[in-house]
Length: 498
Image (cartoon, rainbow, N blue to C red):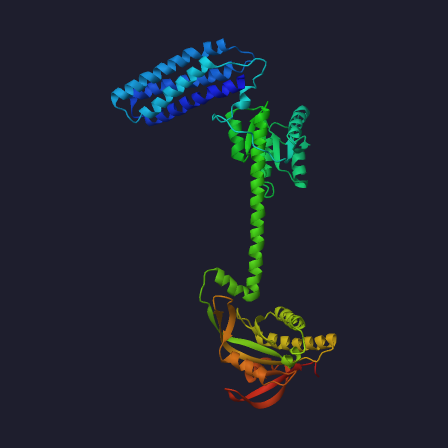
């Protein structure tokens, strides 16, 4: 094996010795009879780890030198571990035995590795700082397949940029270089990237400042960033991670490690982009559902349903109701195809919908060729009778426009009444917002008893409109279920007929 592999393999049992010693020492604070021995084992393991990093950092080092430097302190740790294990067994400290045995086993594995190791000549060992952040677990799988990405390289050194970009090119990535932090931020604002390789020490704006700017930008905060620096102190690593960096690589970096870290960050970016697209699609579907719901229910009622209300029923003391019916439409429809019939109704009723929205009124429903609209709900408002009157007059004009356009002779009959109603949601499947009460029934009677091309209103409605509109007195007419009722025909606006 080469020095890189040997250093990695030696660190594996050492990390186990350190980890179990630290955990045992924390648990044995109230057991001074073993705490001192555990501290000595921990200190000895740390000395061994330091020696591994020091001795194996020298190119061409011999196995005899490695064994000579490590064997004596390792023998000391092994003896201490075996003695403490025996002491714990004799003292009945069963809670310590499993971890002490693991320390002894790890020390034995390290001793066996030292005795059996062979070093291949002619291979240079990368500096330990480049491998200091590698996990100690053995890697036995194949390298992950990395999808090419678009990477921004930020470094003030031309040689560093050149080396990085050549590595990226060999890995199949696209890349763009920036000489300093300000140039990098300009490029990020103008173009999309999958990853940023960011140097720390730079003039004008250092890597910390660039990283801070990225994490405070809503559009860029999720862009993966790997920090690159000759600084390999733990404080620098911690500071970068705390600021939001995804990873940290000390210079000079190991090419294999660089490739692995880039692959991991690109995979993270791919998953995040996939999640973002899913959330955007979900948002679009939610907006579509919202629009469909608002086509069925008033916004105020839809909001109450979404808020958890189940039974919605409101009393309104004063609203104005309009019913409209296309006169003779049943006869006309018998001479039309289904498609032509639907298209005709759609054009007329769509125009009525536009008028309702313009006048701030609430369309309630259509039944066949009949159209129902109300003013003063679902939120009470003044001037609802006047808004209904304006819509009625505009509906007449819309029918005239339609007849002129298609050379037809469609007529409309409109009835209006004002008074109290009950409004609410009925049904669970295909539910609708509907109105009930005598006011609604009377408005319907006003329409059915009206003359063609007329707008018939009750005495109550006329009292709201008399100052602004002209009416024709029809006297009393017999209305089913109501007897004789005084009614009026809305002729137009005052001033426009004078």
